Amino acid sequence: MLPFGDSFAAWVVATAAAAFGGLLASLIVGRYLRPAYFLAFSVGVLLWVFTDVIDEAGKIDVEASFSGGWEQVIIIVLFVAGVVPFLYMDRSVFSNTIIDVGRITTPLLLAIAVGVHGLGEGFAFGAVSATTPFNTLITAFGGEAAGASYVIHKFLEAMAIGSFYLLFLGSKTTRIGTHLRSVTWLTLAFTLPSIAAMAVGYYYQFDAVYFFSLGTGALLYAMLRMAGPLFSNDNLGGRSFKAGLWLTAGFLCVYFAALLHSYIA
Image 1: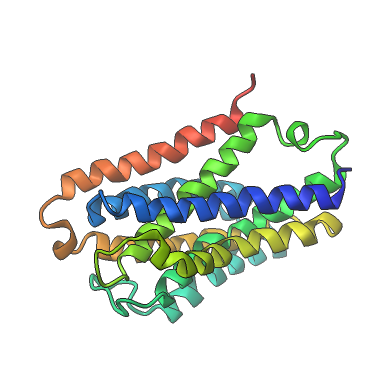
Image 2 (image 1 turned 60 degrees about the horizontal axis):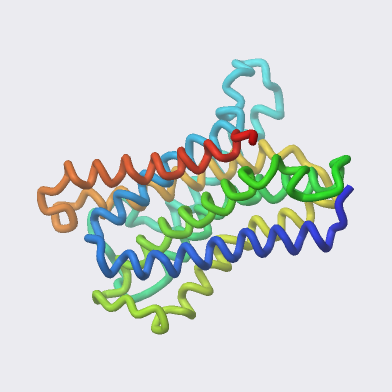
């Protein structure tokens, strides 16, 4: 067992610092990269995250076929509960237009949706911290490479949220000081599920597959929300091939970060 204070502090710092840094980085990248390309890159990031999270959810318990019982029913219900409320709250999800320009409401909703799968990560981290026979965090979680993989994942996910936030600025101004308050709110919306789940998961162990199922549904909403304005003619302007390359680049960035998680020195 690892001490709660040390484990919790490490989790908060790794999660919040990576998220805040990724959002700040998005403001810098947004000054040099065409918005449609940045958004395409971000959709690629979320595509990989979606495949990762749905795998953690046992692909919504598909291997159980029709014999999973109430556990399978709960997993399916949680998946639906992850996507439908977001679609209801954001009825413009299938629109190619950007509404509420200059407001942070919709980017906050997206940040929450992307952050929901952090419930599964937080519960899993808390459970391992409370039950591991190892006496250091690095050893308990697979070494430095695995830790770096997590930080890079959070950084890239936050950048994806930031690219969506940039669409709602209503101008091309991306001076960092102007947007620190918005970046702070987005960081909180994105990271609080992970942080809260870790604190609870240390003392009460739950099967994280249920929370990953919930996160899978929420990520489905997030990808749909980003894809709408991405494929608008006003944003792409006939540059769909280059946008496709940026989408692939985003997917591969998270893929290479995932390779670190499996790396053994």
